[in-house]
Length: 75
Image 1 (cartoon, rainbow, N blue to C red):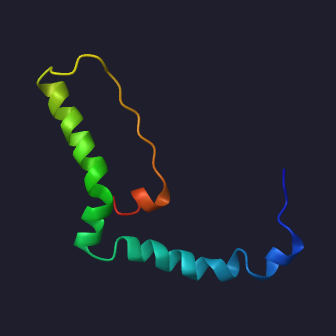
Image 2: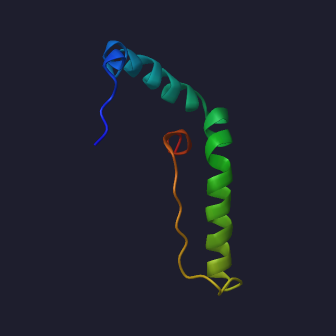
């Protein structure tokens, strides 16, 4: 397991917590920003659900998604 260098103890994790929390809050600051971040993935999921209901895409039975904090925080 890798260890952080000694110099990082002055800034990580305590001094990084507040800026990180602020950045997450800004990603979901209002509804417009939330739609901007979540719209593409929700649109894709909606399209695939409609295809499944209408039996127009029989090639796949399972879709797997992954995300990062900047993608998921607004959900």
